[in-house]
Image (cartoon, rainbow, N blue to C red):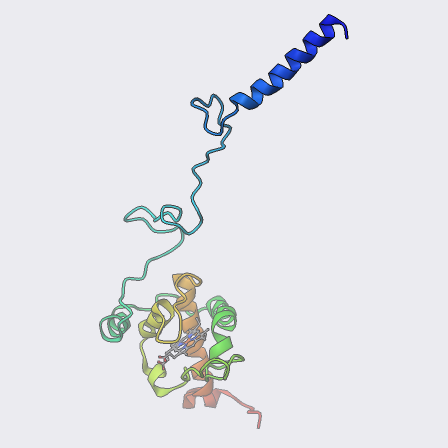
Amino acid sequence: MTRPVVLVTLIAFGMTLGCSFFKHEKPDFIYMPDMVYSPAFKAQKEGAMREPPLGTVPRNFTPYAYAKDPIKGAELAGKELTNLLARTEDVFLRGQVLFNTFCIVCHGKFGEGDGYIVPKFPRPPSLQSDKVRTWPDGRIYHVISAGQNLMPSYATQIDTQDRWAIIHYIRALQRAKHPTPEDLARIKYVNR
Ligand code: HEC
């Protein structure tokens, strides 16, 4: 071999050796970490789930002020909350769409507790009962907002106006099943 070739081979060999000699796992100084040490949080771990800042609410969400408790919450809500939504055709139709989306599955088409999910899910009480028919609107509003025993709250799915629309629709269902004598007098032909 000629001398330069030997020299180049030796230098190359030396460099390779040098690289492996000086390669350590924990170098003292990292001039470009390239995000190797990313301070990523594990999902669901403390610190990863951010709490909303104190005193704030999510957009389009109205917090419900009454306790779930039947006496302190439900009865008070029944007394204090009134349905301000006008009983227009649009409102009834909106209430119908929502009832048939969220409530029908358990409560049934007329609210009689015969939804499609029954009996896989326990049969809910009838919304046609004397009890619910004489409840003030606010009392039904409370059940939708806070839930009641097995029934979950619908506060995150149904906004406040829509809850009142559902209540108007429930009142229409109740009246359809319990018409007043005047209602009946207005009906000329009854299907038998
Ligand atoms: C997953 C099934 C389910 C759905 C969906 C559901 N409910 Fe209920 N609901 C129940 C059950 C079960 C009860 C009885 C809870 C209890 O034991 O007090 C109940 C109770 C009620 C009551 C109180 C009745 C009473 O006699 O105490 C009202 C009012 C009511 N629901 C309205 C609604 C409305 C309005 C919707 C739709 C927004 C709805 N529910 C959706 C299961 C459901």
